[in-house]
Image (cartoon, rainbow, N blue to C red; front, side, top):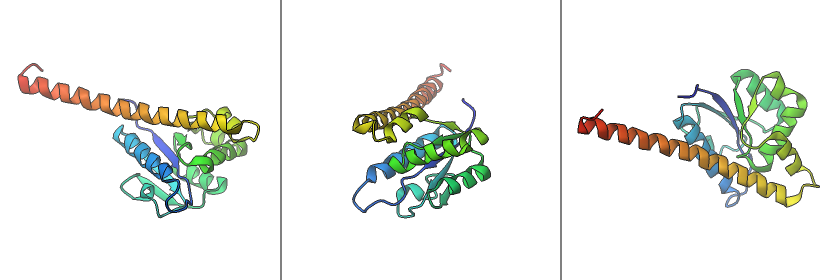
Amino acid sequence: MPRRRNVLVIGSGPIVIGQAAEFDYAGVQACRALRDEGHRVVLVNSNPATIMTDEEVADAVYLEPLTATSLEAIIARERPDALLPTLGGQTGLNLAVDLYESGAIERYGVELLGTPLQTIIDGVTEEAGSRSISELEHERDTMLLDLLATRARGEREAETAAARVVQGNA
């Protein structure tokens, strides 16, 4: 089993009721998959009215302003190994860039998971346009599917092992 990691997930912040529910859903599924894989999940979101901020979804939940300053303070306190910014929409992407530019990513040795930083930077600039945002969304979806596939593979292996024990072939 890979070593247990401490992963910081950035939520999307304020959303309009009935809109952007996919950020909350994707965030909840990512937190569950990470926890199922044995990782510790620290979630930061400024919006308490999301399923993502339920205490059962993450190991630690911070209801804080989504600013580089507040995130750096949480990084200093929690010392995450990795940061997953791609589930919070534009807010998470912008914060990843801000944390990189402030030096916080390097200062605390935090690995950026999912979309490479340069891709995020290209996607949030005006010149990159909507094509890059679509690419970012594709990369996020691919990462989530990979996490879920890994989880399903582990469940199948456990079922096979259990069947062998029942059959006396262990």
